[in-house]
Each structure stands twice: as structure tokens, then as C-alpha cells.
Length: 480
Image 1: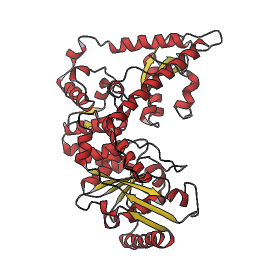
Image 2: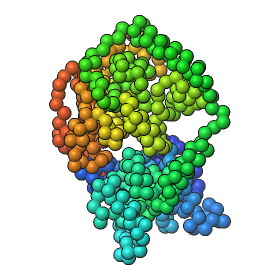
Image 3: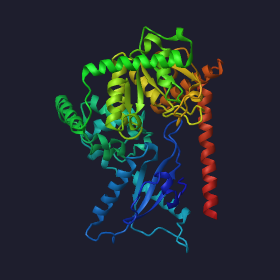
Image 4: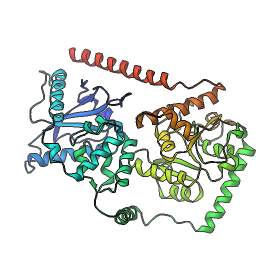
């Protein structure tokens, strides 16, 4: 069913993005249909749009709809993937309303269900009309989404197949590996169905042509006013930064390291740690000793690389790798994988940002993607005392006692065995949960065994309860 949220929920969903509503009326709803994957993909945002033909009489009906669609794309592109509009239906009929102009939620719910049923009833001859050039793409979509080929057609919505931001990364890679190219990579995450995917994919062109197009695109993104640091100054600066870092952790702070015998020197790995302070990166590097010398750290691009002055410092005097929290996740992950593929160790804070309370948040599945895609293990590390010493927003040290506890390496083979036969999205999430579990063990000095089956059952139970609560709440609201 579709629990109707109504227009008042729009500012919350879109994080109060300025939204010109003159061209159309709208009702946002959330899709709570049975999940397509064993453990589901959560909810997705959908909407019914009623265009206003008098907004601009110079626009045709098709042009007005196109204008609305482009506007939704522009706004959605600035949001995390799970908040983007996945389903959009147009209607020229006035939405059913009460005498006080409130939307009749149950009737709108029925309308949405009818539109969905109509959209999903694909004409019988549409598959026959598909050319060989399109069929190869359907095979790729089915493979990436772990679905049977006959479950995927040109009208299938990618969200219904369980696509999230990481699966779009895999899709782009699979398309390129099959000899295709993306004519508009920045639009890939905005694609809603397979038919629309065809409009941004091209199987023609040589690899050299695609590389040249990528080079030209990257060159066009460079700005002329970037600050360039001479090589000799970089060398001197890096030595100075290293000296100051050692002085901070070896002299000013009272630093303790535990579990350094767990550091593997025979292979490269991903370091996963909790995050609550700017002291965390340096502490991990010092704790790893020789293994931390060339450690690269994935850092938020919108915080550490948002000005040319920050970029000049971060790119020349640190080993930070920019990671987009919104926008081109694929480009960021490709950049991160390039370092892992070259044998570097990489530090990632799976919480995604510093904790403002010192409490460890849930880990994001990106770490699972990187581990499986690069086939490297994960070294869990618990950082203690950094929140008390230098919490978010602080300008002075408040404590001097910090520590790093290093756990056992979770090898790539162990992670692959744990996630064998699972859908990709579920595998990434499970690895993130496993790593967090190990870090909690380090924090509490316990050895609680990780139970993947019990966790999967818990996730299913939580989703069922959430659906029931949402359904009850919406019907209570509809009755009021």
C-alpha cells in the first residue's frame, strides 16, 4: 500500500530546499510495497503531480511535464539517494479534496495504486520491439540486481529491483566492462527505469574514445585559480607536518596502543574506526606504526576540499582522499579503489561523520562495497578518549589521554564466505554491521560472537513493525 504523506511533508523530505510550486500541485507518498529483495530496500519516495496549464500558456502539455521532470531531477540530485523521488505520475484531474481543501488521502492512495498497476502492465509487443542493443543492457541490469532475466523489462523501475547508490556504481562499472559508455554519467543516479537508462548509455565507441571523453570532461572541471605548490615546498612541508604530528601524539598527548601485533604486514587492508574527533586520523596513523606511513584516509570532500586553500593543503601535505557525501559517489569510490588496487592501506570512518555525542552510530555499507570490490580485508580499530580530548566544535584540548585498540583482521576470504549467496546490497550492509560489532567488542573488551542470521531476522522484524506502525498511523490520520 501507499501511506499518503501529503504536501506538508515536502519540506522535511527535501530538507527545506527552495521549491517553486507554481507550475503544479503535488502530493508526496511513500511506497510501502513488499520489498523485492529478501531483506528489502526500505521505503522510496513517490509523487502524483497535477500540472497547471495556465502557468505558462506558451508551453505545450508535453513541454510543461518535461519542465516539471527536469525540476524534480535538479532537486533530487542534491539529496541522498534514498530521499530522491523514485516514482512520478502525472494527472490532469484535480486531486480529490475535502471542503477545507485538504487532500483525501484514501482516494489519492487508490489513485496511486491504479496508476502503478497501469504503469506495470507493459504491452505484450514491447519486448519484441527491443533491439539487440537494448537486450544486452537488460542482461546487465538483471545481473547487477541479482534478479532473473524475465523479471526485468524496459518499464521496470530500478528502485523496484533494489537499486541504491552503491548498485548504481556497480551498474556503471558493468556497462563499461561490457563495452558500453555513459553519455551523461552525472544523470545515472537520476534514472528511474530501464527505458530511461537506455537514453544515457551508448555501446558505440572505442575505449580510447571513452578515455578521451573522460579526460576532456575532467579537464573542463579544473579551475585556473587553483593554488600550485612547488615540489621542494611539498617535501619540506610534509616533513614539518610529520614532526608536528609525532610531537602531538608522543609528547603532548598521553597515548596508548593495544593490539599492534594484529597489524598485517603481508597484505594491504582497509582500516575501519569509530569517529568523534579530528584527532582520530592521526591517532590511527601513529597506532599502525610502519603500516601507517603511506596510509590514505577517505575524507568528506564537502568539508576538507571545499575551498582552493583547503585543497592546496590537503592535496599536498596530507594523504586525504576526497569522498563525496552527495553527488558522484561512483567517482569517489573509483578513486578510493585505485589506491587499494595499488597496495595502499586506506582508513575509512564508516559512520560517515564525527559523532557529536561520542556515541557510535550505525556504519554505512560503503565499507562493505570497498572490501568486496577490491578484495581486501578490514582491520577494526577502536579509538578511545579522542571525544573527551577534542570533540566536534572544540578549539582547545580538554584531555590528554587517548588510546587505540587494534582488533583481528577480517580477511577478504572471510568476508566473502560470510556474504556468499547474499544480494549485494545486503552483503554490504552485513559487512558494515560485522565491522561495527568487532569495534564494539574492542570498546567493551568482550568477545561476543557475531550472529549474521540473528541480525538478518532482526532487520526483517524491525521492517515489519515499522510497516505496521506506519500503516496504523496513516489510517488513523485518514479517519480524522
